[in-house]
Length: 130
Image (cartoon, rainbow, N blue to C red):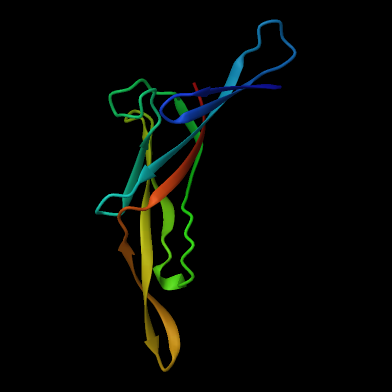
């Protein structure tokens, strides 16, 4: 197996099937970043220009994951991220970014509601076919 790397608006890696005179492109891994909006939603367009108007880098999504890194030591204000949508026809993936507001009862912290967080940089990785 060989790997081909190219950089567009999101970055993509192509996995090629080895052992053939003309290797077939088997899978593509797309990596990109997006910032959460006022509703706590981060959206990454996996297109050649990073916009909804671009050409899709994938024709099928096999797997998508989102993650966020925070150095905040206070667990209740540390942002969390979870996948929201995987939309191949819309050429994007998105994730919800929230933090949990805790309450304290009798000196015990109890997890409360999840609140959307804006302005958080989210890393996306998508594995798919093209």
